[in-house]
Length: 331
Image (cartoon, rainbow, N blue to C red; front, side):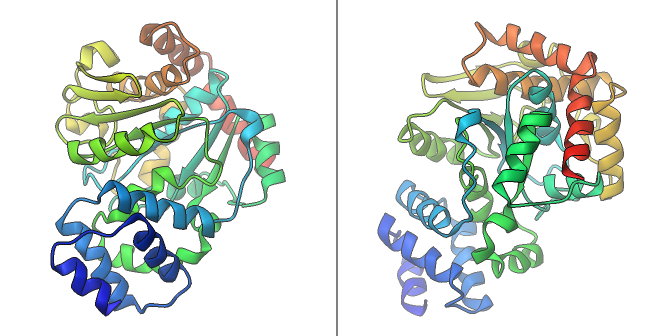
């Protein structure tokens, strides 16, 4: 690792093959926590390259526990995290709304590294029991239209990295790897990123995969459609900027989408919104993210049609029903 670090400290970048090799060695526990921390710190000081991202992803997918859910043509809605905004669990809520609209979901998530409550925190608080058994996950998708893949169960080789990330409490390149390390390798992805540079690298990366994707970046730094500002939307067909009014019929304030100060707060907000008791602002943000994800599947003529499907899912109670069915099947 000393040789690798010296190389990187000279402002050089890794080839795809070398990036894969390093992450495989980290996964196999060949370096101590100080070496791994130093390696992670490099990517706090500069952006990750496309070759490095591809190499890291190759390593993660080689090491991970597989989950073949391809028969369902699943969708994942996920943000990189690390935007430091402490919003409520927008992506996870959007997943349940998309599921309520009939789209099969394989949600990949983890505990919050730089926020009060990550996707795994809120799901655990709601009573969901994590599993990496493919048969169980398939059962959940068939019964509830959605399953949840808790990242540490599928990436056991990276257990040494978890405590380091928690102690750093900063976004690292693992934030960037999370959305592209879903073991189910979903057919469709909506990925939120917190800066334009990351959006650019993801765009190059996802273009090589040949699957429908949408990348979103709120212009004021959120890794989701926040409706606090305009949003850059990037797909395999190109990019455009959309206003809050176009996406969610209204503009909201940062305070409107705050996630509370504890995991318990986050879970209360989550249930309130899913039951249809959210504020106008909370609902608008969740619906916009769900609608953009549904539109990404190319099953809707336009964004407004996808938005209407999201509204119907929430207001009819279908989205909340998906959570109830999931917990019943999971229990």
